[in-house]
Amino acid sequence: MTTVWVATRKGTFRVEKQGGKWTAKLAGHAGTGVNYVARDPGSGRLWALLGHGHWGAKLSVSDDGGATWRDNAAQVKFPDGARYIGQDMFEDSTSDFGVGWRTVTRKATIQKLWTIAFGGDGTIWIGTIPGGLFASRDGGASFELNRPLWNHESRGGDLFNGDGTGETKWFGTPASEGGDFAPGIHSVVVDPRDPRRVLIAISTAGVLETRDGGETWRSRNRGMTMDHNPDPEAEWGHDPHIIDLCRSNPDHVWQQNHAGVFYSANGAELWRKVSVPDSGVHFGFPVSADAHNGRVAWLVPGRADNQRMAIDGGLFVARTDDGGATWRQLRKGLPQECAHDLVYRHALDNRDGVVVFGSTTGNLYLSEDRGETWTAVSHNLPPIHSVRFG
Amino acid sequence: MVHVHLTRHLFAFFPQLEGRALEVEAADVAGVVAELDKLAPGIGFYICDERGRLRLHVNVFIGNAMVKDRRTLSDAVARGDKVSILQALSGG
Image 1 (tube, rainbow over the protein chains, first blue to last red):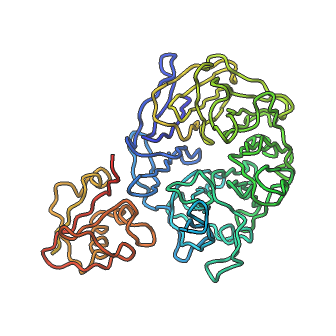
Image 2: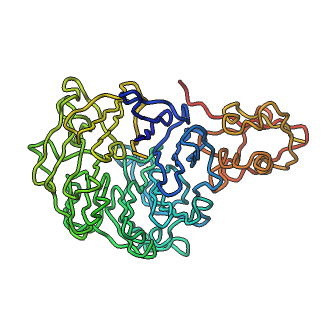
Image 3: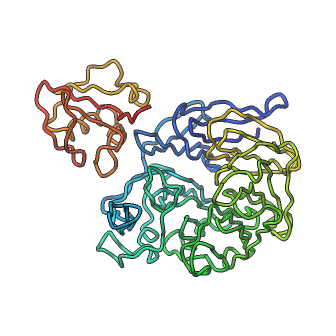
């Protein structure tokens, strides 16, 4: 049976087709913020990334399909000595705004568990805010910070053993929690052919790749451009909102970026901007790549950053079948009046022709024909953070 | 012994503590949290972050007084004290 796991501001929901009708049911964590829920295809275990308002970020697991959950015995924690360079706001009477910004070095503590990914070799990867990448190679019995990435030259070098360069190219992100503008890792995609090849993405730094299981990392931002930097082609500072790759042809990589939609047919060696603003395809958060045809992808565009909601009150999904050369607006079954939904970066997924997405206004829509027609699964869910088949 | 009172919210995650008289031997608040973590493994990471600091939206009182040291939880506790661990409210 096809199952969709929906992570919301107020709990985890399980969506399945019963009696010919897709139905959502609460499946745990009632009242708790859930950032992401996914099933490890290797072990069958469900992993939920929780954000308790008072009690911090927690990893929760279920081995019985979501009937019962427990805190994972090993939680994700930054090791002693983990520091990062960030920006602090301070009172500044000389500023017209009364505040200024200064560069500081902070001790790292987990603010948010943001995404989880599973490698074919059993490695479990978790991306966090601030931007830590944690790996477990013992099935989740322990998680270890990836230090080559944490100490990467792009973020000021090794702060465990000194002050580094004092300069980071990883900027803050408004997606941070608690007003703490720390860059976070929202995308981790593992190459199905080779689990040692992993792509990650950070707003607002860019895309990085390892080909040796995390021992070395390099930027993968060639061809990307930005409109929030005087140098649109600078190596760092890009704002990918999400990346995804084609599972059967992983050299085809898709990216919804703050500054448009990008596509690479050569494993992120070189990106090409494939936005078509006239087709409503430019700004948004999610992208979902087809598992079989690398030239096929879905988006849910939004009005650019000054609004961050559906364009002109009409909700649509955009699909390309030709590597981004052309896009179709798929609106049948979606509301076209007074619909101001925003779809978060993890809240769109596809599998075998079924496409599903959820919005921050609690609407969950599903299509069984690649997006041609849509039905509403629910209009009454809490704000939706992620939607994943599993 | 120090008497510990927990917000009922924590019993949702640590039901084994509900309905029990929680009494621990400790000299300071950090010691109280450490003893609680022995009774209910993991609860320390609910109360404090991985640096041992009290979480931003958690309050600890000794008697009716809020603790002063939220960074290392060094406030002393004495036999017979009541330590309350509560979620902070910010209105609404």
